[in-house]
Image (cartoon, rainbow, N blue to C red; front, top):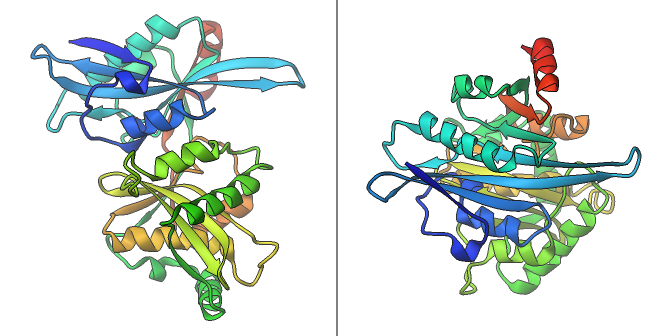
Length: 328
């Protein structure tokens, strides 16, 4: 088994299909933005065929008060593997060893989060002195019930009132409509410290293929009122799951049209119509503390909260041992 590392999208080989957060599509998105530097680790078997790959993102944070410069590496999930491959944990352990070999003394910490199974590579993470901390994850089941039935009474009334006043939503299709919606989103996220938004060009390239057609891996929805865009949302897609990445609305300018609620509802409705089994909120992933109002809003859509583990490894082993003594 050998592992190769790719740092440029132009050098990426053809990868097996898997989670969107470990896809070449996500690699290119991060590469063209200021979200960090991507590294794609690809494992090959003795037959020369790919067995799996893992996307690792290097990020940095600068604070003025107090003055702190930190670098960390983020691993979102267990990676992508060939169908029927049974040695996922062994390959993931090799990926982790490669990460330590290359980045061991060039990071403040390494985080592993969003593992589908909390038991996945548990012994490997413990042996490397990773610290497990409870995280939150919220999703909506779409396979067993119409999502409208899961809405709270208040949100049913809000959506009914918005639709009665003439609010509509659809997928953005024209370049003009996409640019206008992205500009609205850019202005909305400009003052938000809890989430950074990629540049408009990066988002535009994410929503369209190289030939100018609309992408199947990402969709932009717009909320319209009297011909004006008052809300928008971006949703990513993988095999059985839709992931809400960004959403915004002119809530202060149009309080009785509920643009923020309608932007999320547009993505949920489309995912249900397309037959996806689950709808998940990426804005909750990777954030330990969110505004209470946002979490309440997700609950009103019928979201269910789970408590997976997020694993941290700091470059100071004494700190890892101390934190394990507290949390384990």
